Image 1 (tube, chains in turn orange, green):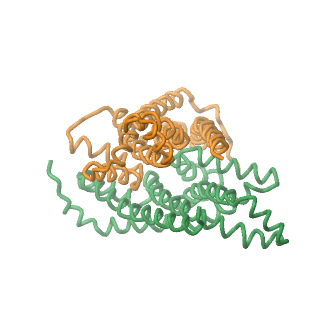
Image 2: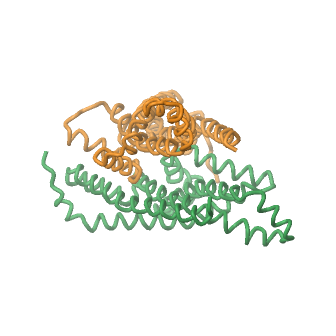
Length: 220
Length: 221
């Protein structure tokens, strides 16, 4: 191999600007996913079929199609179908947020169903009404149990956010692609971009691992 | 706006070719990726620090970066570094196999760990040699437990394979985008593509949960 590396020629300023956009996308999508995901989880578990089925269809649709298809579909079809024209960043946030909502709803559902029956029985014995049982018994333990999965989903969305580069949102991946073609230094640029993504997501996955281990100790 | 899905009938063959490419890519990388993942999963439990360190770095790196950047890296940088031309299919297979290997190695590692220490104690008590202990006690249980997660990894692989369209491989997504550009009917073309992906992935996820329930029943846990 006779390739001479030149990391000096990479301009870091646009990459940092791109990282900010990526983080903005991630945080906004997580805000949507964490709140509306919980509401969606309640809808999926509804006893009324008319409420449950559309919610389930929504979740399954987002879980069973590639994220890139969802994002391209969203960018091309939403303006045409509904006549709404939003900024590309807003569109990116909405597309990623809807995807995360579906995944988080599943996480919430699994942990709500994992709340032991005895605890709810104890709530009844203590004379709590159904609303209080959900608020004081189901919600706290279900939310705590789902934190590792929610964090993992959040970091997956951070990685999936790279897909918006395909529809020309100027995130980290997009800046990397532009820089690689401008400088003719794809190896250096893509390596640095990959390392930046890694530097953000690795610590979070370590935290998730730590939380899971601690939880297993608590449970056993 | 008026929707006209019959426009797409002309492109039936193109869509089928794209779908075939997607399926071919998924199947090849599934087999190669699971093999790689199994080996890496074993390597991560190795006593040798070097082997363990290297496999951990590989897994963490591929799990910690977007698949899109992995693909770009392999498409644009690997040929430069190796000094050889790689065909589109080869690069795609390398990239998705490495991705699949990283996620399945975690699955195998978790399932190897799930075989309880009391079973190993029982092996010692029965005086079983180490080889028998691995082939008849640990592996069958570990593989059985890994199957549901492995299957859902395969579904993820099928979905992630759509990314190769971004580097110009003619898979289902790429064909769909081409049709949408040529006919100026993105809504119809992209919706059909999404529905085709859904029609394959959804039954698979259902099958995974049925298999999972069966295995859980069998293991009585």
